[in-house]
Length: 522
Image 1 (cartoon, rainbow, N blue to C red):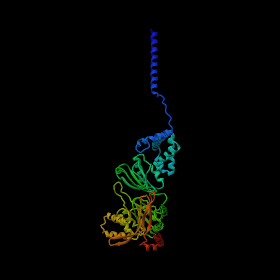
Image 2 (cartoon, helix red, strand yellow):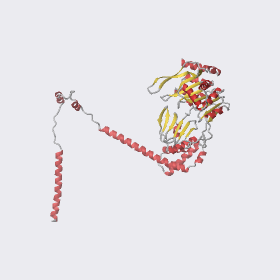
Image 3 (cartoon, rainbow, N blue to C red):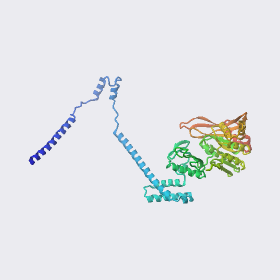
Image 4 (tube, rainbow, N blue to C red):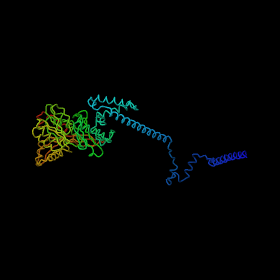
């Protein structure tokens, strides 16, 4: 029985295999098409068929005609190359992200160990180079102790960042070292803009968090004895090189601490360099030199970032070496080359709200310091009246800057600032004071292509009724625009003889004035 059953089972399995095999073969036979004989088609037959069919090649059936056109097939090599490029790009992104993550972890680890292990008081007593060397050696020791996977260049980069954080101004050091940057605008820890070549662009520099940015702000303002905190969230300061700094922090700045830096170039700008930049013509430069030498009271007018302070620095280079000059500024940024210079700076109130020294206080005190020239960095308040008084009381050659769009508006601004002081003076009296004190208004402007140019050199000639009369000695004319977007301009003379001609003769620069006017007018 067991044998028959076994044989029966064997046969059934075999049958089953045979059945499956048969069905498979049948399905294969059904799927495989029978060979079809394709008739030979020659070119003559094709031409005959095209001629016989009226629809093909005619304008009546565009669909058929479209079908008859051979289709351009996409090559497989193109697809393969696209796939390879996408894979390479994704692999590079993955590699970069992995490298940045590894660097970030190593940076955080080293920073925590360095902060806890280094003696900041001993570091502060060292010289700058010695302190940086000490930080670099400490970073290398920490990396070796922690067995961090870092290359030599990566380790050097982290050491530089740590040294900047502990000894300098953190990520700002990179921007401060770059030449050509005019402004640095920090709108929070992750957003930093710079003005480079007259154009505003976003920088890759970032801070760790808002606390890191606030610490850098406090370090900058603390260096000159000022403070910024929640009780005093706005502060003006300066960097060691004279660059102007403005800081505003929360709660006034909603998105985090904001800092604006007006950066000065390492090389001192002169009229010769401004000529190279195309800010003025040689004739206008000669007239500005004469204005600086012959003790003409001058106002430099312009908008924000137009180059007023730079022009004032260039103008003061032509002051005689022996003259006693006193400067009054909110944050000292003027860079005078004369030996006899006294620099004064305003002071904000202390924690109790007392001890404030305003610009007006400084200008008033200047009159008791036997000055020959008084230079006010920026006139923006009641100190305008005190400056006019100084110009009218024997302090010829005094200078200042004012925010205005043109020379006429500069005069109006002076009137408004005098009115801010609460002096109940008639308008005519104020204008007479301005007309007798100010001789020249020098207008500078930042054009839409990013260039900074002198647009007006205007002279105040006196009064007609209750109106201050003025005449333009030089005026900028717009000619056109180049293909790259830069403006074509020409600073031309009006041919008018300056009123300060007699004063120029007293100081022996009348020929300089004549050459300037004749060259430009001719």
